[in-house]
Every structure is written in structure tokens, then in C-alpha cells.
Image (cartoon, rainbow, N blue to C red; front, side, top):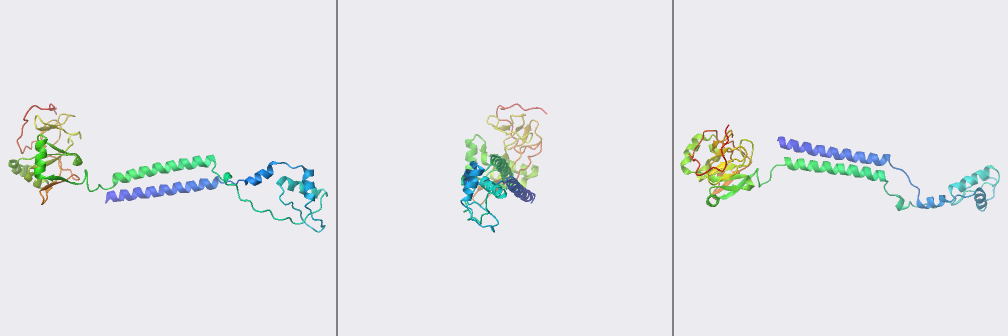
Length: 305
């Protein structure tokens, strides 16, 4: 339930962030908007027209009429219109009638580009949004429940006879990387002691009865990965020297308990199913159900407390 609430919170936060970014981008575009003259208008306004020439060209377009109230030059530039106005005020021209409306000229597409400042602002906002989206996706991937396979799920290790063959082929040890675990043989004559000494016996009973045990690969001391030692037939931690027998019970070193392990069950097809989503704390110090001692030289010397 807590994980679901966290996921919902992350999604809501991501949506709010995207909304803020979108609003900021629209506000920047609105505040920075400006108009531009069409290309045709810019070309017409480039040349300056002399007042006399404007008056002369305007005279040809004037319709004589004393009762007319205004004069307009068709297709004239801003300078020409100003020249005509001055000429009218000085009495040099007779007021002209209404001129023919100038046809609409659409803006030049080349002048409708994005300004450099707008481009940089949009690029920064886009990169910020991309980074935030990536971070949100990473959070969701981290919080999302594990799939149907891999560490954290129920793993079918295989049929018991096949597992026993793999243990023999590994000189007493079988490593399952998908579950980050070691699978070793558990003696049948030690099951009774396990039922009395393991407080978690009911979670591992089916596996122990079938003759195997599934151990978490990390050392309970500080979390180092514990390798096997073929000569001693123990697990020996290279970080601080903790030692465990073949079924993960502590034999020496600073570890506070035996190796942690996973719940096991055996299905109708005689296959071992290990729940790597649940880690069981290892047996307390002093538990030794198998009585196994080092069967050869140790790979790593035991560290003192």
C-alpha cells in the first residue's frame, strides 16, 4: 500500500511539473512576441522619396473636387503619405477622393522565424523537462513491483535430482545468479536438529526434507558477497574473515549470525521453488545442526571478534 501511494505521488508530481513548464513556456512566448513587417513592405520603405517627387506623383492621382475631405495615394509608402499631407496643409494640392484599397500582401514566411532568445529559452526549458522526465521514470522503475522473474520473485531452481547433480559438479556448491543464492546439500540426518533449532523451520522444511538449502549470498556482517571454499567445504567471507559451514551456520569471525536464507517449497513436479522476495535471518551463533568441521585448509583465516 505504501509503495502504491509513493508511485501515485511521483506521478502527480511529474504531471504538476509538466504543467508548470508548459505555463512558463507559453508565458515567455506571449511576453516576448513581437510583430514584423512583411518583406514587400520593407522593400517599399527602403527608398526615401523626395517631397517634390512625392507631390508630383501624387498630383496624377488626385481627383479634383473642392468638397472632397481626404486624399490618399494608392500604393504610396509612409514617406510619400507624409509628403502629401504636408503639401495639402500648404495649399499646394487639392484634396483627393478615396483611393482604391491596397491588396493584402501575406507575410514573408522567411521573416516568421524564431528569435535567438526564444530559441535558447525553449531549449533550456525543453532540456529541464527532459531531465525531470528521466528522473521521474527512474523513480517509477525503482519503486515498481518486481516482475515474475529475477531476484525478488519466486524462482524455479529446477528438479531436485538436477540440483543435486549441479551441486556435485560444483564440488559441493551450486550458485544461482538469478536469485543471488547458493544452493547446497542438506544432510537427511540433520533435519530433526533443524526442526528443533531453527525458529524458521516451517518456511524451509520442504527444501531441507528434500535434501537442499538455499542461502543468500551476502555476509550478515557487512553485506560482502561470500564465496565458497572448496578445500574446507565452508563459506568464507574475504572482507572480514567470517566463516560458515556448508549449510550456512556460523563457525567463526565477526558475523552476528549464520548466513541468511530464503523460504523453500517443493512442488508436485519435484521442483524446488525459492522465494527470493523474503529473506530469513540466519540461525543464531552456536547452532550447528550438521556438525560439519573444516574438511581441508581454509581459504581465509578466521578473524577475531
